[in-house]
Length: 262
Image 1: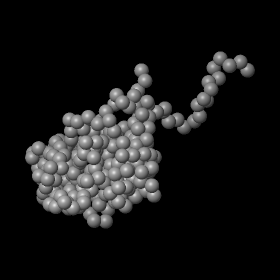
Image 2: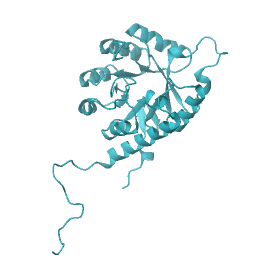
Image 3: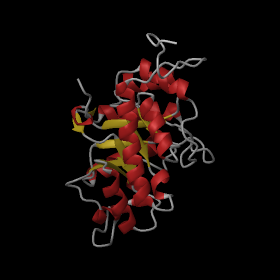
């Protein structure tokens, strides 16, 4: 039986998606460039920072004017929040403004590294799940915290591959593997992806999806990079499902010699 990506959807929060690439909407040189890159990515979910959206004066130009909501599902995020209370407030503000009752939950603990404050993250997850949100928390690559977030009701866990915007790629593949063994909810790599090979590595490890912003928006040609990321995610998923060969210390002949006369 031949494996097909078309028969392998991402199920997240009770919804089904064909694409396993989630993209952000920040850092683009213009809203027009953002719109073109989103289209090129093939993504069906785009993150929107609640604090970047003008929720009071809809007559002014907004990034929401450049997102086709019939094509993309909005995923509000709590970027820029440093306490559980701030994050909960931002999530509720986004829901009240009609963005979504889904939230990419971020509670930052350090201004320099932008690493998450996992204690506050867990507290905010519990509150928002109780309030009926579909919570997707951005966390570190700690398997113990990943399990705690799942137990708190998170619809997925989103461990970083490297610090936000660093472009360093997957720094701790072993921990990602352990996280995938530790939880039953989807595992989505969030942060650190710099180029297509980074996205492919995440998917080859068995992660369910990849979320990125800077890797696309910060590229010299964001539209071309968005396409590259789309293809890398698809190739990585296909390779994972196909099953890679076992790594060996010594060579194995590509053309077996059994039955060959000498």
